[in-house]
Structures are given as C-alpha cells and as structure tokens.
Length: 558
Image (cartoon, rainbow, N blue to C red; front, side):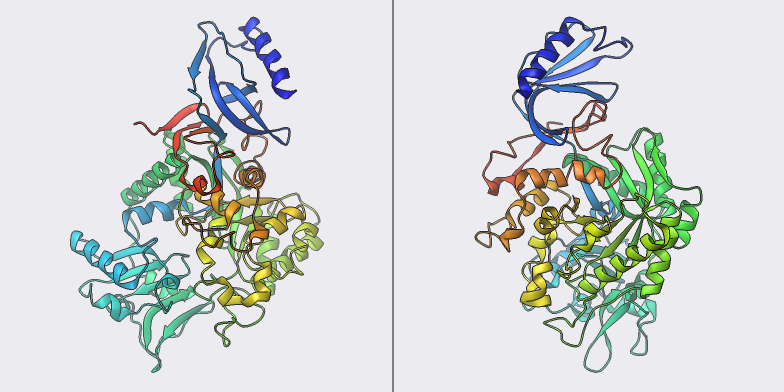
C-alpha cells in the first residue's frame, strides 16, 4: 500500500517538475534510484527504491519506480545497492580516537608478550618521541587477567617514559621512568576516586586506576595545536569511512569545541558532532555561560549537554557496586562523588537547561545517578531535557523501572557486552548479571535506547555494534546462541537505536535519524542487505559511500 502511494507521488512530481516539487531552480534536485532502501517513516520501518533530496535535505522517498526527470534534476543510478540512514554513535570520544590513531594501538592484542613486542617496535620506530603513549590494552584477555607491571614495560622501554591507557580509559600503565618523572613512591597516596595498584610491600606496580591516572598523565606535555588538528582529521576519516554521519562526543574541552567550530566553518567537518561539555566545573562555567547551543553551522555541531562521571569501569574493578565484587570481596569499586555532590552538579547543569548525561557502570553508581535525577525532578520539575545515563551497564533490577519513572534515556554500547562477557559474570556473579547489559529489558519497558560504541574503547565501526546487539556473540560466533540471548535486540530495534532513537537522545529527531521529508539527507550505501544477510555477516558489512547533507563525504572506491 505504501509503495503504491509513493509511486503515484513520484509520477506527479515528475509531471510537474519545476513547480510544486521543485520550485527553486537555483539548485538541482538529486534523485538516487534503483536502490534497496530502508528507513523509519512516521515511526515505522519501510522499504523504498528512490530517494529525492534538494539543498541537502530529503524531499521524500518513493517506491520501486524510475524517475524520468528534466535537466534540472540530477539522477544517479544506485545500481541496486542497499541504502540506510546515516548511522549515529550516541557515545564516543572523537579526539580520543584521533589520538589513538597517532599513538600505539593495543586494541585486540591477546597476550602481554604480544603487547610488549608491539610497544618495543613502536618505540624503536619513533626514537624522537619524548613520551611513548598509547591505548587499548586489556588484561582480562591476557591469560590469568592480572594487571601488567612497570617492570614488564622496563624490559622493552627503559630510557623514556611510557604511559598506556587501558581499553576502557579507566586505568593507566606506566614504566619506571614515567613513575620516576612523576615522583611516585611507596608514600604516594591515591587521590579520592582513584587507586594505585601496589605489591605485597606497598610499592606501586605501575598501574593507576581512575583519578590516580592523573598522577602520571598530568606530567605529559599537552599536544600542540597541529597535533590536535591532525588527530581530528584522522578521527573524521575513520568515522565517515564507517558510515557514521553523527556522533555524540562524551566530554569536550573548551579548546576542542573551538577546534570543532573552526573545522565546521572551514567546511572540513564530515561527521556531525553533538558535543557534551566535560564536567560541571570550570569547563562548564566557560562553555555554558551563554546557555545551550542547539545548532551551529547548519546542524553540524551542537553544545547542549554535559557529561559527568559517576564511577570507574568494570574491567579494572573501578565500577561502583552496592556489594563487593564477586571476584574481589574486599572491593566495591569507586564512586567519584558523594550523593550530595552529585545532586548539586545535576541541579547546576539542569537549572541552566543543559541535558545532563552521566557515566554510571556499577549498580551503586546507577542508583546514585537516578537518585540525583529524582532530586532534580523534585526541585526543578519536568524540564524535558531528555537526561541520560551513559552505559547503564550493571543496574539493580529494582532500579531499572526508575528509568521510565524519571524519563531517563539509556545510552548503552552493545559491543561492551561482547567485549566484557569473558569477565563480567566473574565480577558481579550470577544474580547481579541479570541487570547487566540489559538492552531488551529497557526497550520492553518503553525506555528509549540510544546505542553507541564508546570508541576508542571499542571499535569505531557501528556494524560491530549492530551485530553485538542482535547476536550477543563475538565475531567467531561464540557463545553458541549468544550470551544471555534474552537480552538480544531484533534487527529493527538495533538499527533504530543507532539512528532515530540516537537522534532523539540528542533532541535531533526532527532533523536526523531517518530519511523523511525535511530532514538532512544523511545516508549510506552498503555492500549487503542488513535485514537479509545471515546474522554472522552483519559485522562484515562494508560502507561503499557515506553522504552527509546531500554531499558525498566518503567513496570507498577512492
């Protein structure tokens, strides 16, 4: 019925082209036909065969028909390719990705020995670097899962300081030279919200958790303006090549925001960025003093939200738990703030009309954050800010319904489940894991689910996230049937969480997230049908073209 109606529309548009369907002859209408397209339309998933757009925005989509147009219309043969709305990553770290691409990348390395070999080769190839930096190590994939040590690093690099961030960004690994330069000794105390891993004699071993990371990181020279620009260029190249037309950047500085604006002004921003101000302190006071920026440079940028940290990460046992870790009975993780401090930060940002997005991984952190949102609701009333919990990774089952009661969006990352499934239940046990990575439970109760990757913690490719959301398996198909498969999403739900609902989580559903009239023509062409290929092929999907605002920003063949 739908395709028939649209076919009639397209015939009328062709018949009267230059009048109702194209009243402005100053710019061409573009039509891409002979495609197999999918989009959400009036809330429902539909298929279409033709996309028409003008001035960067969608005119409409139509059924399987052929456009016969005059010279004022550009017609492109889609050659039967599959089209999807541009994908949106609802939680990412753009500059972190760019920086990782410039430094040592330890993502996916499966043993300590392999990591050390990688580090040694990088150091030998870069003899002029004063600091050796990198990211991505994951000790839970290395044999017994113990933390590495400074001594391990000293065996491959001892003449220069080395600082390597863990895959989740919540722990760092230093060599002895780095600790020496930072003045770290057995007497050094960890700051509140941080932990120094020590040996049986109380000596620091080289791993620093959460706030303690700054004991080392604060001694690393700030990147130059040229290095920051190069990092952003590298990140943008990665994002557009993977089909990301918009990302929500979870915590930006004042300098980063200015860099983004400059790229937007110069026409170099090939992915839209919905930026969250980093914290409720000085950066917020500076960037938020004039109120939220809902749109900058034709919706290329927005600055209307804030990112606050509630706790650490599960892999480094820094996530704050209500009860001790099942595999570390003397440890409940790290809450970064008291309840009163969290309450005050949330009140401050919400009173200034900023959406407030709070990192909470452990069940104690999630409860604290929900309490803070409840307190703000009681104090400020309903404000329609669409506040979010970022990660919502391990949530007490009695707290899950509170997301609905408080109108909180669950901003979650499907690949976290498939990366963590080797250790998550060891950390929290068989009962608490029932509230872990519980996307389907949230969706079933009506909570808006916005999916992302948390890159560079996880891979930037959103098809990895779509695959994880649907299968809850690794790329080898393990475990058979999926890890806690009752929490799997179907393909439509997964795609919606990476498109329309991710746009909703940024107050942008009227301009992004689907190919509907008046929205930006952000879309991708891919090499296989996401809805028809076997599940184990979803992660292998390749992006052939990425378009943003009706302009091609990535062609795979170039």
